[in-house]
Amino acid sequence: MSIRALRSLLAIVQHGSFARAAHALGLTPSAVGLHVKALEEEFRARLFDRSRRRPVLTEAGEIAVNRAREVVDLYDSIGDEISRGPGVAGRLRVGAIQTALAESLPESLARLQRAHPRLRVRVRSGMSAELALEVEAGTLDVAVTTEPVKPYPSGLAFMPVYTDHFWAVAAPEHEGASLSDLLARLPFLRFDKRAWAGRLIEDELRRQGHRIGEEMELDSREALARMAANGLGVAILPLSPRGMERLPPLMRLPFGSPQLTRRVGLLIREGQSRSGGITPLFEAMKADEA
Image (cartoon, rainbow, N blue to C red; front, side):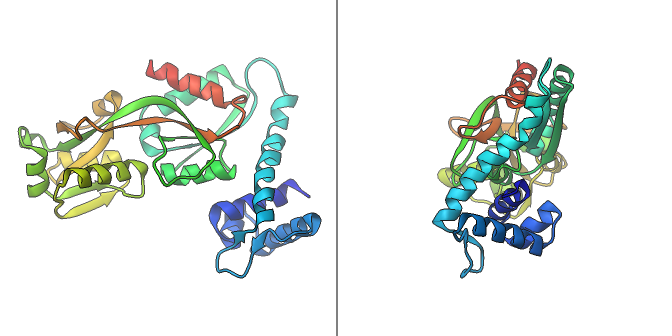
């Protein structure tokens, strides 16, 4: 059994196919297939039901994946154990939503690096739902996301850091209009429904019974705000006080009754050790929000 074979197994579960797992790992599909074959021979059990179009884990496969995550986590922590000294050392793989990257996260990461110069931090962006799958699969150690909205992978724990409030925004000349009036007269600039924030907005619009006109759909909060500021429609966005300072002039209405909120924080696997860089990252983010 090799660490590379276990990483292949986890990547297949995360990406849903041998081919996509191979692409993510920089291997050929045949190499990934050989890794799985070697594991099956060693465990003397089928790990995937290959009678279906997409590989589906067998009962033995479920057990193997759970144990593989533990083994890979332990392997990845060896460097940290060897290089103990002042501060935290090792590697921290971080995923982050765009809104966090556009606000305080860069400052938090800089604070983290100053306090722990031997910690190697890798960052990639994505939507909360996508990043949650990577945390579950073990290809990310932690993700800065919104609080999980169903459906989401089981076995995850959330550490809240700060809270955003949802606002309906439009060009300043619409000051004084109600949300119903804005939605009836202006195109709706929709926050991508694949994002957890987008799902919250859709649920609240449906609950309030609002009628939605012609729409555009984007996954960038900043782009939606600028389009609204230029008179292209009305958008509903999660905003923090710091985020509002960065936007162009807009009219704002609280969205929801009571006003809808979302928490942003760290998503980790349940039972995952908070040693290494996870706790220092959490502390750095909390310090920047104080």
